[in-house]
Length: 311
Ligand SMILES: [Zn+2]
Ligand SMILES: [Zn+2]
Image (cartoon, rainbow, N blue to C red; front, side):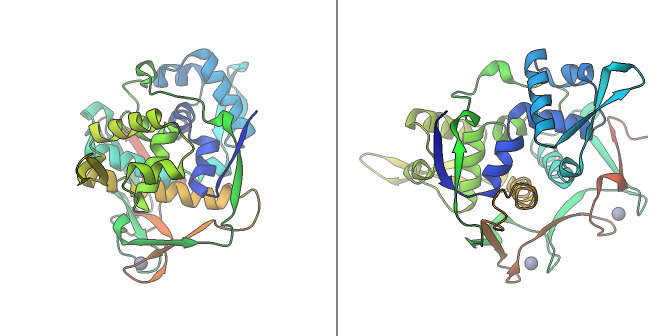
């Protein structure tokens, strides 16, 4: 198995564990109450072999636990662990991006009710210090105590192209987002764009990826409206890739993933590879996902949800 050395990153570490398209969808389904093999098969549109492979993987990553159900040992159910329940705020950020940019039909809309205050809620990402909403353009980055290099197995980079047959089930709450973040290169490119990278060569220097694959991903992100192109040079013409509003709106999804990676995916124990500053208040940035009514931080067991018509 070949290996490569990359800059340590909590986003990359998190993606190595759960960033596979099917892993993201499986964890999502368990959050929304679908936790049997058959239920996941139907909800995600995955093949049996891939589903059973990913369920094993997620158990080995301590993100799912298998228990026997009332139906006996041949019909197990899958439960979230402390580690994967901690992805809850991240899952909420996926839902609000999807609802804003690809409004679902009424039958697919997620309604959230905050038990603590009794209100139906819209999650917000705010800075834990100044309590203002966080915009990705108000963040600066500097190396943290764990800013080293990671040895990574190349096998986790398995797909070379975005194949049409991998489109997930149409009922999925993440049906559009998943095609952006469930591909490793696309996810990496978006994460780097938040740091200010704009030119093809800059992305290529950071990512050990073939030029044609990277071009494919850049074109895809432009088609999806995540990037807009702007020529910065003529003869030959070269384009900068600038995040659009839709692209910047992915920042909460990535920030919550980064924070999860900081907490749960630090194999060296050295601490965060990267520190973030909220330039609005000048403090270390820790994003909190809160209820827009009462301002309390949202936890899975304090929120009821329905998909479709509210009850
Ligand atoms: Zn702040
Ligand atoms: Zn509330």
